[in-house]
Image 1: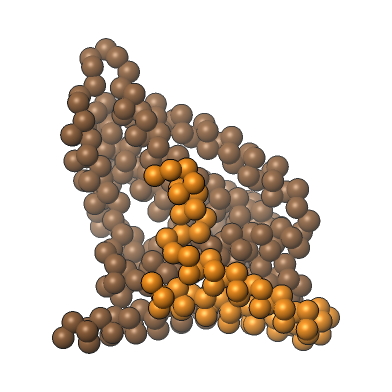
Image 2 (image 1 turned 90 degrees about the vertical axis):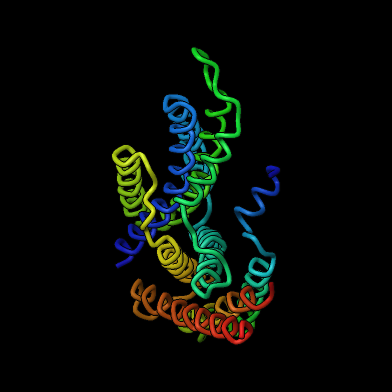
Length: 65
Length: 246
């Protein structure tokens, strides 16, 4: 296994779906935060938005193989 | 709460990674020569210690707190969700169970195919295999412990957990001279995936300006939500496999 392949597997895992899903999840969370404003409901409830997006990324990584 | 979860998460993650490294070192020691296995493992430990000094105090400590929380959160999610994904696939029967003992047997078979070491000379093949085994598993240990230890107040529990795991695994290896074959590795890795992922969501959200209701106790309901969805996926995938099998 080459050094690049090892590093890719170490950091991104065996599938591209999970890191791609996480990227989408964080991009969506940042977008929602920008729309909602950092002092509004985001501060108390934004964690649940991120949790939901991360769970969706996990489920997608199990379905798309 | 956070202290206990950090220590437990670090201990479990480090113990499981070290069990895999131990399987390779023991195979080299038993098939080749114990001294060369120890030399390779010690050399890898020295390199890993240098890497730990760079990853922890130099790189992570130089970041502002909110950026640090976001970086650590993403890093823990990358590791944690991958462990969780594999755990779901293993528990649902879609993938073979994890076993350091099986790796030990496979490594022994591969080593027996190599020419034996020359008497009176250093066994560089054995040393290199032991070095690679310890180094590759150790890099993951360094990244997980650095990430868990980089949050405010996280260093002590992360080091306590990692130290306890190190002592336990090395003592077990010295005493038994064989990897444990009855450890429920698949379930433990699933649990580590849950703990790392819960910390990942918790810290990444804080890095994005979130104040979790109930403070550190949020780790419990975030972990419970992850566990609920993961176990539901195990049940759904297992049922789908049974239906397609007949």
